[in-house]
Amino acid sequence: MFYWILLALAIVAEITGTLSMKWASISDDRTGFILMLIMITLSYIFLAFAVKKIALGVAYALWEGIGILLITLFSVLLFDETLSMMKMAGLLTLVVGIVLIKSGTRKTVVLKKEPTHATV
Image 1 (cartoon, rainbow, N blue to C red):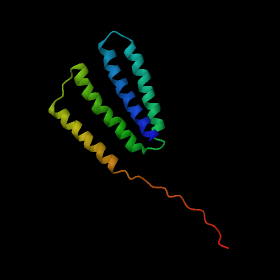
Image 2: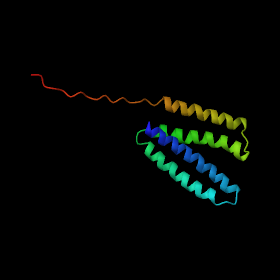
Image 3: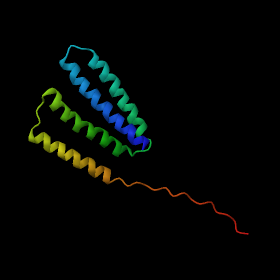
């Protein structure tokens, strides 16, 4: 569970960093660039720790896919960007892909071997 929390933190940091990049590009404030640098750095650090226990393909697909989905939605809400039918179809395809990747990854169950005792 801890590694999934790290992945969620990586996603939040990625979204914040990318939105900060846009904010910095349209304002005269340097704070956006500093926030972008910190958040994207944190995002990679959290992702690096998350992949210790989460399959790399799954972690990266969720990190990038959910990031793209939420960044697109927030950019529409915060920066008045447009969301065309083509973009919506792409986002739907992205969500389907994430679900397929996640559901296609089997969880391996490690059975603990019971110690064998000599019978007397």
